[in-house]
Image (cartoon, rainbow, N blue to C red; front, side, top):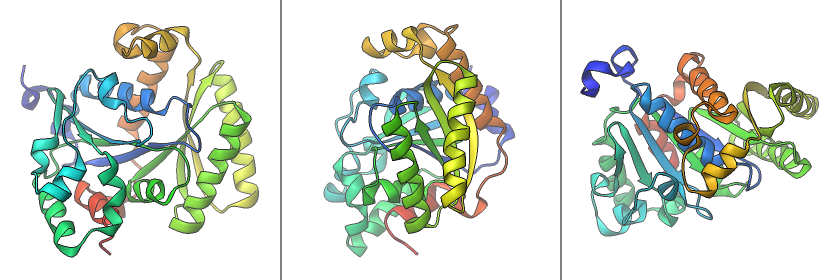
Length: 280
């Protein structure tokens, strides 16, 4: 059955919603969340674009069992069309391999910048969502990716260093990029109760020192099925659909579907790329 007949996007606005999934430190399960969410949303009839922006662990393609030969760098340096680097994972689910070129976008010549933006505009707004898997940390390039997105989701787990690094990331994005709204995903927790508790703890610290708003997006429990699926380079939402982690991810996807209070001034795929290459 074709997407045009069944897609939820028929009932949605024709603007792509851009969401960054980020973290203060590595190893918190960020990429797994991105890929599983993308698959779940896609199965619900949405057209989803994944931007792999995690340089150190660029393994989105591995988890999706696809191979990318070209990336953003080839578009900038070789004049390759953006459609040539897109990897079709399945109908309505597409991957843009970022590569190192993604982190050089602030230093483009006027010609390179215009070429890239012309290429991106050819994508139109045919996707309902673009999920961005960023590198962890507070490097300038990570900040650019997050600040260009409509919604910033910070993944935090109970590890004290994850907590501290999440706070640092929120603080830097607030002070340097003037971001003041963040969604929090608590991962690798015992249950939803621990997720709420962890969020509350982070929210208390943030409210004490920063003028920002945090929203609790949900919790994903520590699940042996998730670990097993990741180890086997599989998606838990497909391999173990009834597992605790899969049910939590499904609930999270539902939150993204129903979330209406968006930053409308950051409203399109074109806007995202314009911000990324430094167009005022």
